[in-house]
Image (cartoon, rainbow, N blue to C red; front, side, top):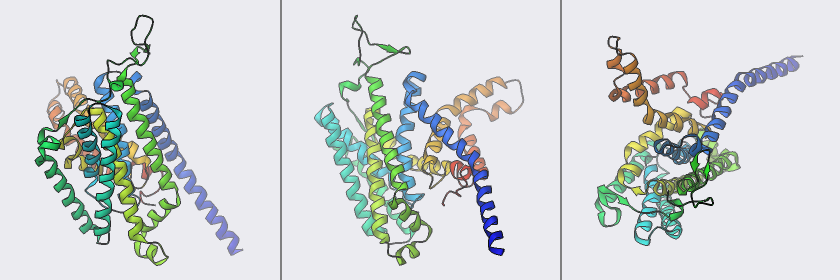
Length: 373
């Protein structure tokens, strides 16, 4: 009788947990589906230059943030060197395009060398440092990232120094290149948007980012993902049952580094410019951390939500505040509070509120995972 009652209680608890999380799952999956659809149709829904830049940046940063979540969210590795790997992919591509000319072979060779360099550095850092405690490993990666930033600034013959590198990309990605032309020789328009090289460039970034993101989703759903979670939850227990913790930690560190370098390739091709401020800056590392925390560590889909919210705030919060200040011009104090240059204040307050109401990140809280389970 006692067994039957405990079984019924267990079923009841499971049923209540499912009923508590299914609305959250619906919200999360629905939001991610809408974001994916908006990104897939971005050139036609948002044809202006600024909106396309925002959409392309979101695609690249979803890959970058998700690859960092493999480390901090799924394995419990705190690293400050992720922008270093991002920069290696970007600089490898930029240097090759500058020296070899605007061809796909330059992207393949330069980007490939950047990815290889990222893998080698990640392997060296992993083998030398992943045996130490978390805070000491974080300091090692921070030092490595700082060294890379100095090298990029000082080796101006190769990297362009503080000014960075500007270069041309393949003609297929040029706005002047017509993918399809009509009888008059003009570019065919779809929903009023000309099908030119700019469209091809965006979909090169979008499809590449989608493939990389799906590959990471497959990793976390595989047996490797289960091992990473076991290491995160209890490293000593994982080692005691036979898993080679250092091997797995080094492996995922290299995988994350390689994917971050691929994101750097996409960023370099899209921008046609690479410099320390756009790929190696510590501000980018802070943005990555904030995006992971906002979306939810150890959820992967949290990268999508976190990147979209943070990027939209960075690009459009000032505009919204300017509109608000103009609309409330007759009120006391409010226009001063909504002065556009104070956007960082409101961004910080918004982040505090998000952490308070979604302590495990938006996706982690809505899915009832506690962000780390």
